Length: 521
Image (cartoon, rainbow, N blue to C red; front, top):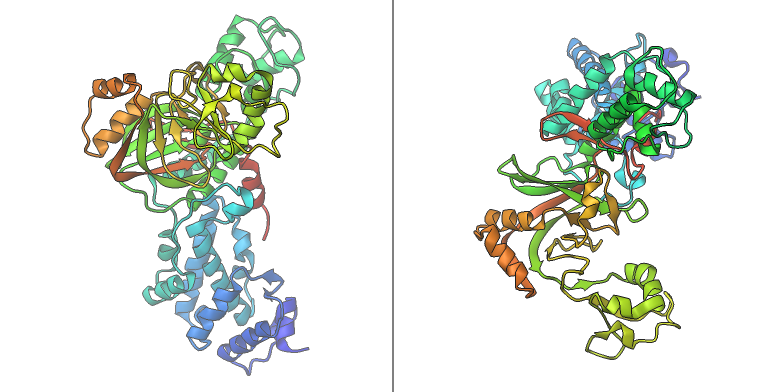
């Protein structure tokens, strides 16, 4: 058996011939990879085999982590960096930590594993441990990446292994706030209070063991009656308000999920959002809009400072608002609503077949095949129309019943998602607002128009904007400088008071991230 096979199998490393120096061994190992041997060293799979091959071939197979005192310090710095990555939710042993700490490890194994660990850490710190597309196909934001091989060469030239790697973490203040929150949670002691088991919603006036457990969970260990009394209702309402839930005093599924969380489950949530920050662009503009789907909120940032906030409504769990970035290029006063084909066939067609006149009374009209003009929807016989043969263009005229309300803010994108007003503002009274078909409904569209126009240098008063709305005239306003818009999904984030707060995982996106972060590679 060749020495390469010994190395791959992870046994007999000490008997590798001492006659071959490390550079020769490196060349022979890379040649074995070219021949199809698995990229395994000491039973550890290499995470960055192609970059590793490129790195050593650029330097004529010269070793960097073994053979001298400087190399020992480099390895020590690398080990420290790998250990510290655990504070960011990484599993250090996924980066060969245990083997790199082992005394007597064969020099070639140490050399290969150290290089692989640096390259993998560099990539994961820059772009996340996971590929967001494998977790959330609707995520289409990305960060720029520096070549891990170039970073390793730079780190070696400067003798700054740990500093180079530390410089790759996201630089956003919110990322650091999440790290600080993670450290606080890790230092907390978990409570012994029993979880409240699932069951029917708990309401004032109910009695039973689950009510007693609820009191222990909210009020702390102690002896309590099993009655859902006024004191307990007040505590439930306070908890719901702090958690961003509907404040109704009823412990349904959403409230129960939050109540039963331990500090370990909060750490999981932090780690999922740290990973999301590693997926986000590293440098954000000084002025932009950010919609956080999970928080049902919009933030306007101007000159790197919070300038304006409002509540929003986002997509239902089965019609989720996607994560993406685009620039707002224009907005429309008193817009028509061109009904997307999916909504036209799934939502509107059943209503048209039932009572087309009712939809026509609130402004719906249709363009039939081979005709250029729109006509009232009641002029079409919808009885034989199905989603398969639906060949119509459906739209709603501007007006008080228009689904887009009085303002539509356009950021052209492949998802046909935009920001708009709504005729139904009652839903903004809910704390959790996943009610739309994917677009983002605004609680204060006039306020956003005011912010956008003044940010763009087109100074307008709120009264001027309201007069344009009241005119019922459809008018498009193009921006001189498009405003970037980031639509993100963060279930742990910094609120307006600078505190890290948590929100329910509306789209159930956290656990797939956490599950993979906790797996060994």
